[in-house]
Amino acid sequence: MGDGDSEFKILHGKNNIILVAPHGNMKKPRDDEWTAELTTKMQEKLGCYAVINDLYRRPRFKDKCFDFDKKICNLNHIDEYEKTPLYEQFVGQLKQFKNEITGRGEIPYIFHIHGASSAKFKKACKEVYPKKPEDVCILIGTGRGVLPKTKDESLTASPEIVNQLIDFFNVEKLISYSTNNEEYTAKKAHNLNQLFRMRYPDDKVVSFQLEIRKKDYRDNEENAKIAAVKIAAAIGKLTGVVPIIEGEVVKAEEKLPFDTQKVNEAVQHILETFQTAVAMALIDVGNHLIETFFGGDYESASNPRNINVNTSIMQIQKQLRHEIGSPSQSWVYDAIKVSAYSRMFEDENFQTFGNLSISQRVKIAYYKGSMEEKKQIAQLSYDNKWSVRDLSKEIKTREFGKKPVQEQLVYLLASPKEFMEACEQNKFQKDLQGLEAEHQNKIKADADKEAKKIGKQIEKLERLKKQYEKLGK
Image (cartoon, rainbow, N blue to C red; front, side, top):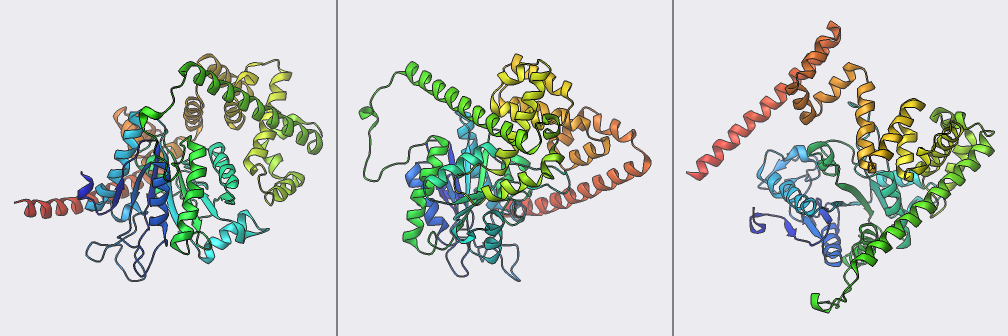
C-alpha cells in the first residue's frame, strides 16, 4: 500500500520511534483537540515515523460505530473497523513501520497520543496526585490492571521503562504519572496500545498511551507546538534519539567521525556504573525499611501480604506520591523484595543471585516459586547469560504450567496463536479430556461461542469480498 492510497497522514522516519494520533479530528464535534498538530510537530523534532488521523471522528450518541461516508470511526478501538479497508490503511501501516524497525535489529517505541480534559481525567489525576491533581500534565497508560479473563496484566512497557519516561518528563517540567484508571490504562484487547501485545504479539515492542491535558498544552495551536517540543525532548532522552534543532541541518559528510571501540567502551562503562548505583540504592533503601518496619525479619518482608498490610509502608508510599522526582510505588516494593531475598540467599550461601543485574533480581524476587526454584532459575539465568526478556519468558512459562489445567485452557481460548499451537500438538484436547464433565462442558461452551463469533466474522468478510469483486469486474 502506497502512502497515496491512505486517507491518513503517513510520515516515514529513520529511527525506532512511531507516533500515533488516532483522534486528531478538529471538525465539530472535535475529538482530542490539537493532537494531530502536536504529533506532527513531535515528528518534525524527532525525525521519526508517524501515523496521524485528522479526518475520521469518534462516534457519538446515536452514530454508527463505523460510517465511511460520514467519516465516523474510533481508530483507537480496533474491533470497530478491523473488517473495513481502514484497518489495512491504519493498523497495516503501523505493522509495516514496526517491521521496518525490528528488521534493523532495533527496539520499536510506540507512543499513542491522546488528549483528555473531562471530569474522568481530573478524577484519574486525583488518584495519582491528590495533593495537586490540576498540575498533572500527562497520564501514561501501559495496560496496568488485571484483565477479567486471564487474571493477568498485559503490560506494554515495563515499570522500569515507565519510571524512566516519567523522570524525563519531569526534567521537561511535565508532571506525569502512570495510571491504572480504567479509562486510561489502555489494557483491553481492542485498544490500539495492545496491538503488539494481544493482537500481533511481539515482546520487542515498547508501547505507551499518553493522555495529555488540554489546559496549557492543547487549548490552542501555539501551546500544542510548545508542548510537542517538550514531549519530544523527553521521548528523545528515553530512546536515545536527539531531537532536531530548528534551522540546523547537518549533512552526513559534515558529521565528525568517531572511534567505535571507544564509544562501545563508554556505553559499557555507563551501563555498569548506572546498574551499580541503582542496585546499591535499591538494596540500601530495602535494608533500611526492613530493619525499621519489619524488625529485621527478612523472611517476613519477602511475603507480599506482609508488605501490603504494613501501615508504615503504606504511609511512606502516600507521602512519596506527593513529592516530585520521588521513586515510584513499585520501586519501593522492589527494594523490599530484592533486599529480603538478597539476605535470605546470603544466609544460605547462594552468591549467584547477587551477580545478576538488578532487573533480573527484581524478576526473580517476584517469581511465584519456592526458594529452591528461585535458586534454580537464578543459576540458569547466570550460566546461560540470559537477558531480562529471556528470564521473563522462562518465568512466564513456569508460572503458566503451575496454574490449574482449567485456567490454562481458558487462557488459551482467548489467545488464538497459543490455542492453535496447543491444538496442533494435541495438548489442548488431551488436557480437556482430563477435566471433570462440568469443567469440560464450560470450556466447550466457550469454544462454541468463539467459533460462532468467528463464523459471523467470516460471513461479513465474504460479503465484503463479493462487493470488492463486483467493483473489480
